[in-house]
Image (cartoon, rainbow, N blue to C red; front, side, top):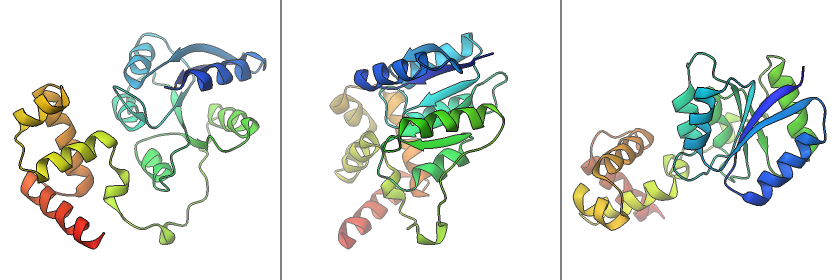
Length: 203
């Protein structure tokens, strides 16, 4: 039986390239191509598939959000993060959130195919990472939206002002702030601003 796959990728050109790659190989069956993480999660909740290929930086719900949404859910696919992100901490984050594999967009297409086959067979596939060489920089893992929020916090903006400025709901602001506080290892906005100012001084 071919390995059934769904893709979550924001770039239309890469969507087409991946579709051609899988359609030309009888080992795989492409079930769906989703433009963002939210659409991908909704698809996976309705359709059982073996493998999900995730971008890391996506609209509506990024790769981290997808991993969090599907972690531990019965019938969820095994997930492979496929990204061109230069952040060297992404593979570690992906593994911690339950991903089964990681592949860089800089690798040859055959590497992705081999990764899918290995993950479908029950193995985990990640690049070697010498954790001793990684700098523990929580700011490196912030999304562009989280950086916007952090800058707004440092400027003294309230949640309501941030929501209005970014054209998002108050609940969305609170959601992003919770993720931001978790990443920075703080529990409130005052501590987050203090870390931001300290980092700015170092930079």
